Image (cartoon, rainbow, N blue to C red; front, side):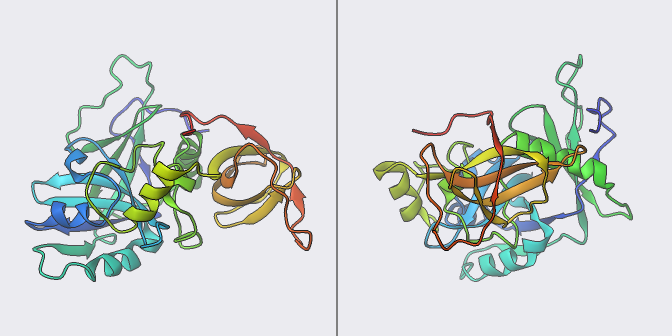
Length: 290
């Protein structure tokens, strides 16, 4: 694994992430009606997690929002989704004074992680946006330059995401999961006291009227296994699952996040051709709502 960085000038290039720029006098108001979190919480120096959902409450994309100027928000998401999300959001601009640009080719995203035990864990860089959770991590958005992301570094960052229980949505899983299946409520990515937004009715109903029966959980295989986002399978106890994110560790074992039934056994259909896999549960750093 990559050593934790103490020098704030060192960073990991996250080349697979893209950036949308949402700019204009109505930028905050527009996003308030589209995303699951409260735009009043997007403050300089912090990256806010939010979901973008369809009317059925299923997650189109997960965004990290960074305030780059008074009337400008940068949204970080997988590069493979940037163009389609920008186009989808643009359909709802109507008369709002807002402009949405896919600036993934002109900006690059870097990640910084430092040792929390260091004398000064917070780097003195105004251009960084802190990610919630531990170890301390920041995002930095800079002008694009010719640079190559080393796989071992990128995989280290992905491992931190998985250990933190933070989901990501890719092209293979866009619109597959309702917000709570991805634990977005447990991660503070849903503001239940804000006004209406796309998908809000379904998400609120799941929150107030009943327990979500399938949630994202963390696992590790006891033997080498190749899993990728979108992989569907079943565990040896009969529960079906779908992979949210996965990392093949240096020992060949796979650590992954997957949406599956909570607690109780869920029998797979008898005609299922899916071969069962063995996997052991790993703890999440946050409790799941009852």
